[in-house]
Image 1 (cartoon, rainbow, N blue to C red):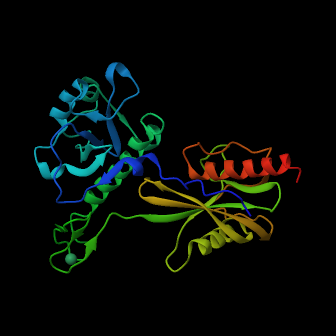
Image 2 (spheres, rainbow, N blue to C red):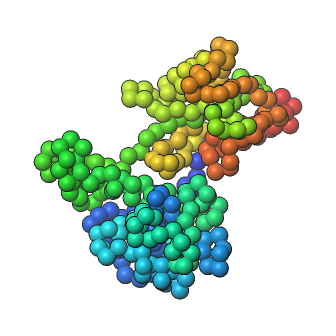
Image 3 (spheres, rainbow, N blue to C red):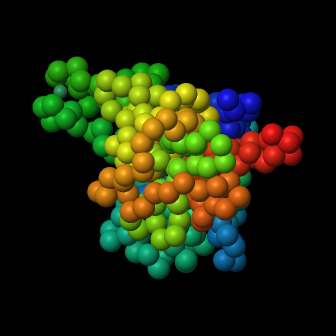
Length: 308
Ligand SMILES: [Zn+2]
């Protein structure tokens, strides 16, 4: 048993400060936070080459950029809601080859950043907002036509949803659940694995939820398929939106039951048991995987201190 709450037991800064809006809600007047994306990267103001901050139309540093970037059509700007009372909107900027060649970003005082690089650059609430905006924008671009018959879709009121007027097919922003699986041996070791291309970095197991299974069943199946071990006693550890492009990571810990490690070489390069005090290179602090590992390490340390 892990005598700890899940790592996401508290409401995060984004959800605490964000009031969602849905079409056809109109953006209120007043200063607005804009999140323009180009080729999946967020454009930020980078005054005097600084690290970058979100574009607010009441800041002089953003005025020229927004004048240049904002689409002519109001419909192309998606109003998302308010963050701490400030209206927030997102839109897509044409690809680099078209209206805005790359060098122009510098002339406009902008920098482009992928969402992974953005973590820690802006406030946590703004980071959450950027992940949300990226997903709504991506869904909007992918939902223009019905996938059944190719008819242009139409907006549905009071939701992020598009419907086909011909066959009734509806499209919503997708969320794909995936599990993160911390397998421990009931003692001092956890099972960590390395994927091709990860270098020296190891992490816990992970896998997408398949149709027809529970989250716990997904953990059991993935541990068996990827590492050849049987597991039991699944405990929820926390969840995390992961906008790459639209996962919801759901973390669990579980206990090894039987089986020697035998990896699926199409998925993994190496897997091994590691002691809590001799861990290899781990994922960055941003990821739920790392937070679950850190929590488990703390639980082992606490047990040692308590003399267990
Ligand atoms: Zn249709």
